[in-house]
Amino acid sequence: MAKTSSVERNKKRQDMATRKRTKRDELRAIVHNRDLPLDERMEATRKMAELPRNSAFVRVRNRCVFSGRSRAYYRKFKLSRIALREFGSQGLIPGLVKSSW
Image (tube, rainbow, N blue to C red; front, side):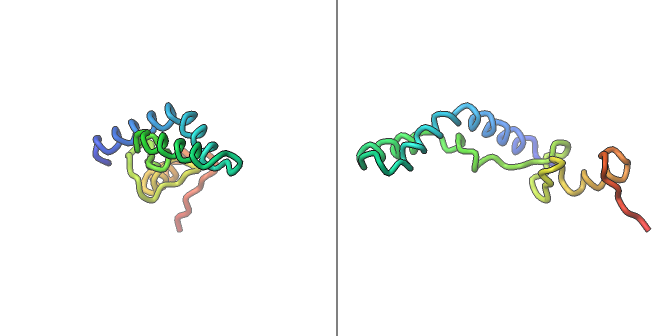
């Protein structure tokens, strides 16, 4: 199990990133638009820098739904390798068969 504080911090980042997504996307579009004057683009860059760092989706870490483990994470199942093997052995994941010989 991952530390509860790490999991909660990641949830907080996820919530903030979803709340600030539209604002960040609008500013990013202004910054990348080459047709706009440079001072306008620099102002948008400054406003983006003023946003909280945790509002960027880059800072959100993928974690296992059951254990909270951040490493060896399978996106398709949203599980870590350990949980995937455990649930696969029990037959709880449809279409997944763990081989044993």
